[in-house]
Length: 287
Image (cartoon, rainbow, N blue to C red; front, side, top):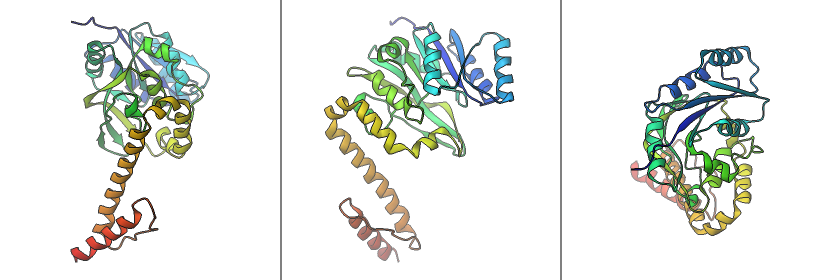
């Protein structure tokens, strides 16, 4: 039987008010309690957030670290660097963990040394109510999309070996970049097939803002990890094409079922013409 590894939770905070206290409570209520809970305040300025952080510090049992605003990557690195445990979970200050998150994810890391990090499915709440199911995997599985939630339990020695989060990536995708660095040639990330992360969705979230720069940020990831992209070029391109075909099929279903919707511009060379023919045919046969 593998040895039990020590765990801690790092909660990153920036002007998130009482939500940070909820995140901390979810970390403290784990069925496998962490050895430490560390809150890293990334330069909060609003009075409510500062008051919440002060109460957390005074309550005992929670370590609060403060730094000038440097972005979530820097905050995570600060927290993991301060941790003294084998495994460290990173948690954004506006999300929460189900009580069994540490128990379920730590078991995956203890069972196999090739597993560099572990996470779970997510339950989205707020603007959207849904379950999202990342798959994890090896490096090749992370080349056409990020396959793990930002909230994850990470081996601290693997974090140190790969250099941690890139603190220059302040516009998004820093977790995707980090996971590729963490996995390397031999590692993988495992996922618990159960929604153990409560992920808050909002119209002005950092995740939505990063989508506006998706091509730029993806290009940066390709440049930084060029070797692994070249090694898995064929499967990456096929995976991207498969995803595009799936999106087109869903669009076809919507447009074909409602004749009032316009076809829009019919593109050439990417399946657009064939899609237009299929839609027109389906509309005629359904009359």
